[in-house]
Amino acid sequence: MKEVLEILKKKKLQFFFLFYILLLVPILSPMAQNLTIMDNIGIFAVCGLLFVAISILSLFISSKSEKIIYSILLAISIIPGSIYLAYLLFAGVLLEQNSVTSLFETNPDESKEFVAYYLSIWVITGVLIYAAIPIVMICSMKSFKRLRVKDYKVLFFSSIIIIVSIISINKLSQSVYFINIYKSFISYKIRTKKEIEAIKDRQDFAYEVKTMPGDTVPKTIVVVIGESLNKYHMSLYGYERNTNPLLSAYGDSLTVYSNVVSPQVHTIPVMRSVLSMADFEHPEYFTKKPSVFELFNRAGYSTYLISNQEFSDECRSSYDILLTLAQNKYNVAKHKQHDDICLPVLDKILAQKDNKNKLVIIHLIGSHMAYEFRYPKEYIRFNHLKDGLVADKPFCDKKAKSTIDKYDNSVLYNDYVINNIITTLKKQCDRNTAMIYFSDHGEELYDYREFAGHAYEKVSPPMCEIPFMIWMCPLFKAMREDLVFDGNRPYSSEDLVYSISDIAGLNYEDYNDTRSLFSKGFTPRERYVGKKKYEAIVEKFR
Image (cartoon, rainbow, N blue to C red; front, side, top):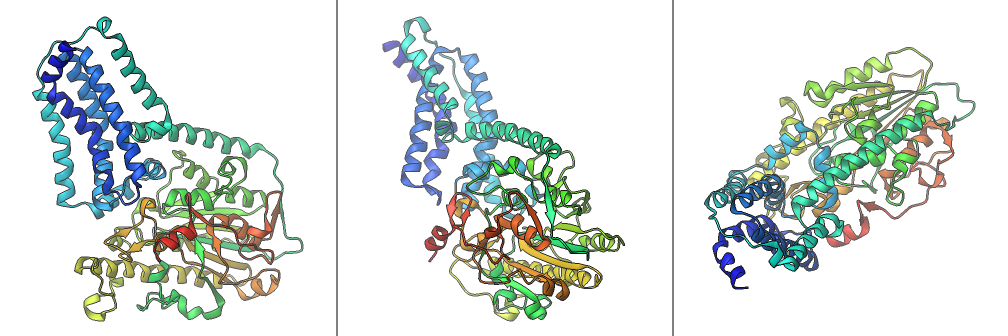
């Protein structure tokens, strides 16, 4: 033991390095609003055990090898550490598992805007200092005499067993931030590859989709998916500012739903859910059951996708594979313009004089942060200094109020875009036309705290309670006496596939009448946002 203690005295800097890399995040984790005391204890216990095991193992390697190993450890931990700590600093939460996965699916443009919105001199300074300190420590490490394995076999092999166990056992590795990120990335890649292969393979399977008999008038159904729209910032839902002057004019011809919840608060998991039959109870339906475009393709529809959010025809993600199943795809996001770029594309599609039914899904960039990029300058209308309509709150300062002004401008512009789509459909008098609009998820705007945005770790009602509305041309609506339009029904957009099928009059093996928002047989179900019960989220903020 005397030999061990002598080496330990010389390795103070090495131990501080390991402490810094392995235990800084656990020590700061009590700052996270989304962790319980037991969560914090568990994280610290696992990371502490790993710290002890690596410290002991380092006694058996040479000084030169140790510097190399610590340099590798720094290289693989610095980016995950910066992400975790930056997120903790600006959002006050520690990343959870589904948010880690969302990092891998976020496109570069979205990431840039997210960083630009939240970036501050303090965050930049903090990250730079965080990265610089361990580099200085490695350069300053002194040499020492190492232990021989044969003299301390139990100590050596016990350390290896502990390290291997923490890396290999998922429940343990999730507590170590950088191990969790790399394991999650590998799992994500494997899962995505399997999903893409399964979805491609099922295109060859027989699956009958029947259409409503006796309907000779072609249908055009347009589904518009918005982005980050807080319904409490829509005058259509009672907001003081007139952010929906055009949609409000439709009166009863536009059915507005007041009790709709999204299945998640991040775009890609929401899109995976609303475009497929996958739900909280059956996530495996993502690969086992047909998605929206597949159903309508098999029903003989011409299917179209217009997206002002990036997707890849090369199917880099499972989200991409669902979108690329559309027969006709228009990726207008590459032009980096406002959402009205979708309108001429829709006009072009509807101008096609054929007798085929059409399904058009339009994915808008909507009110995605940074909000000031979401509308042209002529929509800079709202100013809290002039109208006094932004409430005074302890956490809502001048900058926050200015942010709300920008957000409300984006809501006003979205009103213009949706109105234009309905106006275009109104001109299609020779067809049965309908439009469904909803937002992928909501957005918090300083509702309860000093925070604007959406994060599953701190999910609140404004993040998951979404606007949802339907417009149908009068003749189509009158013809469908079997449909019910009750704006008060409690509904989750994860059941969208059944509701669209109901509007289109589709019938197939997995169709569930009780899950269509418009069905006479509709039955309310317990709603989840990720793995959290919606009612529990509401209760937390009462």
